[in-house]
Length: 380
Image (cartoon, rainbow, N blue to C red; front, top):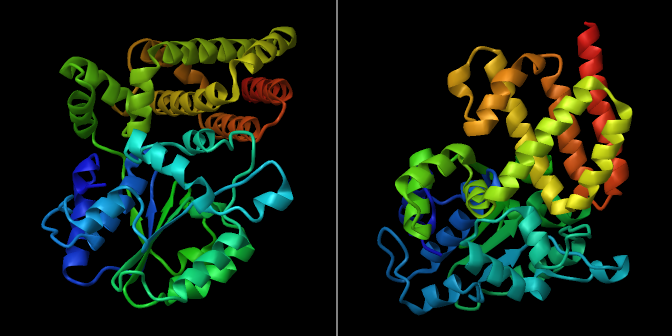
């Protein structure tokens, strides 16, 4: 992976390049930001730069070290990510290396820009709980007790460190706090608040902002040959997230269905007709877990834009087209009394559905709670 593969984030890249070239790179860093902000791609590109023998403003791509790191096969480049299996006994023994071919393929296909749901689907964990378990920590400790294979740097990238349990984290604390000489850790998280405090306290934080719309638009034109008009529209809708931009590009029909489902649900919940609400839940449960998870993300953005619209801050409303037309009518119903409970309900619905809960039951409870929120607000 090259720095040129990273979309935007120029300030963060310049900081990393300068810290490496000046010999002041932190021994452990948490790179925090949504999946579409480029955290994993930045970590992989930085690892390549550290190992490269002929680096300038980027890794050269032609030295032996680059060949190994770009294919994620360098012996001193260690990747750790959550894994799992069908049985509790066997999952405790599984390591990231057991799923490395699938992980490499996913990185190659996406350039490192993928969601955790994409990752779980790729390695066959869409209906299973993925964790970084104690066996992974023990394996890393054994590796680190030995000398580096090539006698130089070692880089450890931990994807989704928030999936560590306390026992795993405790085994790694000393190693992260005082790693062997010429060893660097990059922990790539989408949920910084969920990373254990003991881990956070031992790492420097590199927080990634949303991507600039012009960077997304330019990348869409370069990578997919879209027109400037179409790429600008998608960039506007993406809200600074490259993964969302690609989803919009690939799923224009899905975006229309998200809109229709959201409008229908909000109207039904406002009216409070329980029979219609149950009918909606039963029908929506057949749409699939991946669809429902993305529908929840879409709905939270719609609520966010509705709230800022209700505050009179229309310039902060980033919606477009039919979404914006609906929001301008719906905004009065999203206020300081409803916005937080509504967002929480959508977030919990997404969590429960993706954790393999019964979709019909989850959606019925969720929709009834949303209707109750509107009903209680009417009484105030």
